[in-house]
Image (cartoon, rainbow, N blue to C red; front, side):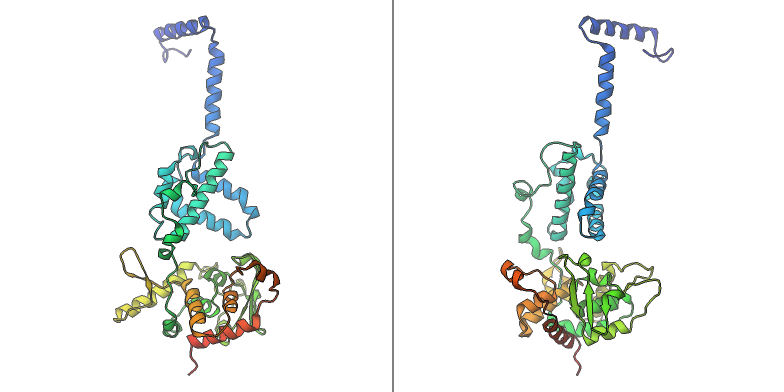
Length: 365
């Protein structure tokens, strides 16, 4: 019952009386105490925060994902948007208000990212339910639940699209860009010339590039669609690559100053600096006139937006077939029948398209 003086004689007498009453009722006090201790231990065994659950989920599922970057992206989005709000909460306590606290601030301004965050929260909570860390319905599910509280992503996606520069301004932009110094500027220039995704460019290595054949072969593991992609290199792209320094201890084409990959923010920062220099000079800068931020101001163009710039130019200013432009962007073929019979990669036709694009961006006159 405890030792003196922490437990007084009066307390001992009271406890003894309670024990005798339980015995008289057919209750074994020792068994009852053991059951309570067992219940406490069982309860503690099911305690896990959302952040801990997310890390365990990623560790469990990452072997089936196509590349390590996917796991990194999972962790980064949750760390940025979810962990500050619900990371320290026990998964069993997370409910609708907590999920909405994460999603509502970004749902209409970063729709694509917000939709991914929602799906990832849902997956982590599903995992936690199966592991018996929580029970009940998943508060992050979309159909029949959050779809009644948040607008359909496709209805607000225009607010979350990557801001794109009108193609009529591409030449002036590229002329300005070529005056910018730094690896980030050259990576952005190469991104625009190849119409590639910035992540594909930032991760490019010299062994992927054949300067003699003028082809950049991106392995399947680095492609969004999980298929190897050959990019024809224009004269301008080859000249850019030949002018770059190479480092014996680093195989990246566009390495960061500390040796790793450039961040996507590095390329965006180049555009931001260019835009600010234009606006300071009294010009409108490099904006997407079709998109506005939450203050109603036009959005500044983004690195990824130049893929839309390229696609609009190809559709409105050239006679190149649609499928050639789509393949240049490494988009999947929507028609399953067409995808089944298409065996080639239209490399030569894409080369002609990309040379026309380079000439449009950098007139040789």
